[in-house]
Length: 255
Ligand SMILES: C[S@@+](CC[C@H](N)C(=O)[O-])C[C@H]1O[C@@H](n2cnc3c(N)ncnc32)[C@H](O)[C@@H]1O
Image (cartoon, rainbow, N blue to C red; front, side, top):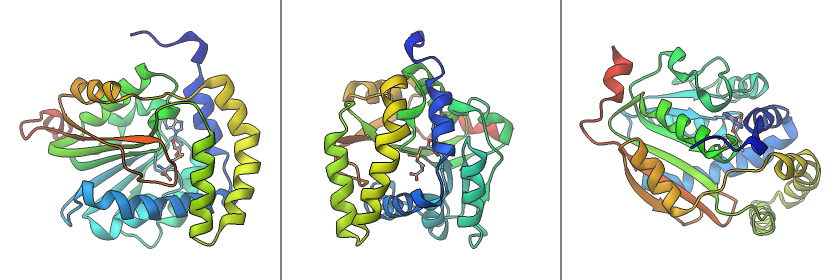
């Protein structure tokens, strides 16, 4: 599979866009993280001995909620601004490590020397990698640090490029959590500005069930597709991939 030339540099543009978010966006990220952990904790079955890798941690809200439940969390992202906010949001969590920024697509993940890990999170990340080739590569580098039996949750994956349903879900989640006006302002400011422009020009990767089975198969993991809502976004799919007990990736990482 070769990258779609129309979407050359898409991953770089998205990585830059997400790193240009400011404190204002924190409301939505923090609300979304709370909803995500409430709903994903069951399928993820986090345990106190789990070592977790949050790939595309953003400003660290998911990592901050996961840290008290597990042995350690590695927070990894491409954006220096995101990572500075993540360090602030994780400063009371000694079990969380915020790593230096990586390249788009996490192609240089190996350089961090992380591994083996029991849980890998890609929460609302894979759609911004530019194209399916980059998504496949990101799963491959993640698989190299997975312990035998590790779980990988790639969540919040859009199945189409339509924005309408997502917008309605975000507004209603904001209302239900008492911050509807802030969500509305966020949506108007970010979504109808740069977000929409980049989405129109650069595209987002969309995923069908077969894509998700193929992605898991590509890293020799067993796939379960979740179609319930795990975040404030509706109409999304989530891939829960489980690596086999004999998975070799972590051995390479541990050597
Ligand atoms: C919607 S935010 C999600 C952040 C966090 N996982 C959460 O749920 O709050 C998207 C994340 O994907 C990362 N990202 C965007 N484009 C990327 C790319 N091309 N390569 C790697 N990461 C990227 C951003 O830095 C950002 O942290």
